[in-house]
Image (cartoon, rainbow, N blue to C red; front, side):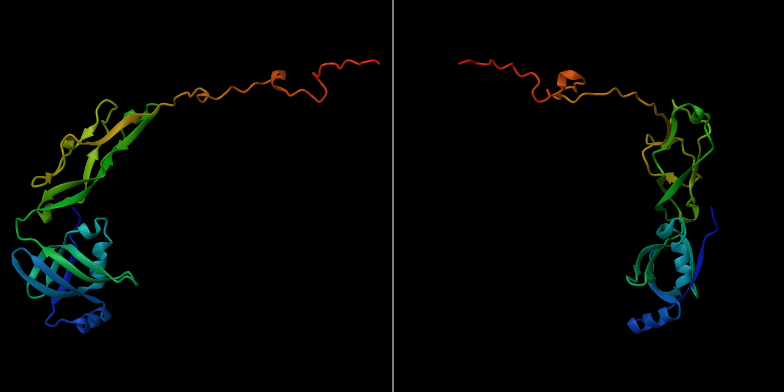
Length: 225
């Protein structure tokens, strides 16, 4: 697992629009922290620190540490956020904290590693049906990703959810029979020309030509007086 991001914060004693505007002018934003059976806490945190969390691969699903001055660190995750519609900047955030031992359902990416020999077969194509998966675990045990070695993957045998390996304390919340990755064979089919039903075939040659003017007319009999 990657090093957990830590964001420092300070408790706000006063509230109001004027206070919030002053915080934003200082490069900070108002944050409400709740959960874990504790009272809600209103704090202020650096905008650049929270923006760095949102820029990670997992974005709003990123678990990070919020270190509140005088109260200590807590594991938190974005529960809600408000973005300035004009400037596109974060201007307010609600963070959920977790009690010790509390588990949370998270979505983590699936990364395929290795190069199966079966891909050397003509027409063989790798198909990854699942690119992320839901897991249940304590925040501190959340994996950055689940890596799947596909070196031994063959055309006959696919990799299913039941084949995935995770660390102790991590539960996978997907059907075991779900296919994660497989190799399929794609073959070109020789398509024969087809005539649409009801259409007449094109005729090539004299049979379809229109007679020239004067050709094919029956000779006229000359009458005498």
